[in-house]
Length: 263
Image 1 (cartoon, rainbow, N blue to C red):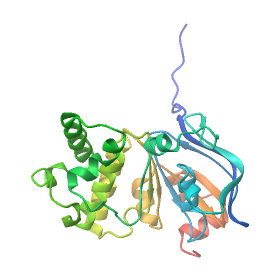
Image 2 (cartoon, helix red, strand yellow):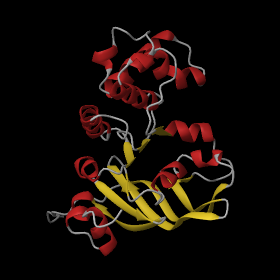
Image 3 (cartoon, one colour):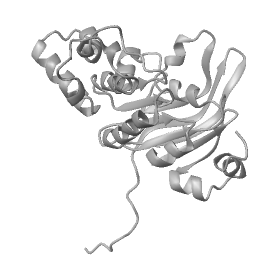
Image 4 (cartoon, rainbow, N blue to C red):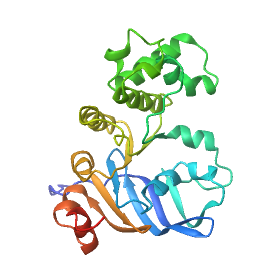
């Protein structure tokens, strides 16, 4: 049997499936009936004005919102690789190992560079030095930091520059071998040079990880993201390939936002 050639790209696997999600802080709704499939091994940017629900959505994906009193999903579901992460029997520690997170403000622990990277491994009971050494080097190389710190691994992480500290936080997140990396404005506190290094790093990391990044920087979204979701007032307005969303958006609200008419 001869198969005719096709120019259509193969459909992307879905890493995170969000279905009719509603979320509230106490009685105040924050997300409304949000449905979105995030493709595996791609970078998806979440954009929109402040308070639109970007960070709330991100934190729903590893249930960090559980730590906030009164915060709850009121309807809908989130499946990660087919597993409903809000099932009552979900192991939250394992979920957060598989879905790592990097925050807006770099937050290394007041420990050595080495101990920052292996922290989660020690927490899980790993004690063999050779294994810890291997993971530390692998994670620091993956975060494009090894060559800069290999001669001072046992010095305080707080002595690194801001950009280095953020890359260390990325190394710490990937040391536990997650499937997904969530990044909440990871470059907001960095200068342009450090931001460029992080953006270059993201393109390398997506070969191994699914990445979801919240950003207010429209240029950063166009440089980094394969797909972009535009949120407004807790609702998903538009989602699609980044270049298409920025050049020929389908929704007038999206057009107004990406052209700077509002937000």
